[in-house]
Amino acid sequence: MANELSNLKPAPGSTKTRVRVGRGEGSGKGRTAGRGQKGYGSRSGSGVRAGFEGGQMPLQRRLPKRGFHNPFSKDYTVINLEMIEARFDAGAVVDLALLAESGAVSRQGKDGLKVLGRGDLTKAFTVKAAKFSKSALEKITAAGGSAETV
Image (cartoon, rainbow, N blue to C red):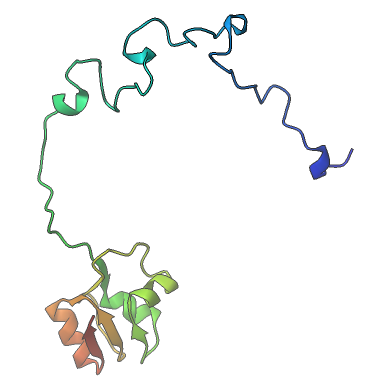
């Protein structure tokens, strides 16, 4: 028998029929429908929230809190000049989209690209980024390129 769509079946024992609760005493799941007598779990719309431990102090509140999360921190994708020098030809317009396309960066920060000054530039590039370090700015202009803040 050929493997065709009309002949496909799940492996034996891999599927079970769904239990239809509350469909009469003869079904074995009638009356209380497997929810037991009374109590919070027997009511409709019930169910405890995530992390609830039955009134015991929950783990999230028992553990000590450490550190500080700065809500104003910036999330930049950071790249050094040595990476730009190695990957691109002279005259290229280097921006975050090009870096992502070439595989130079794996993730893109929500606040854009920041160029840092590690490495030397011998080719002229047009670099478009949200921020530049002072050394990166000096090296880009010294090599005859331009740095555009976007």
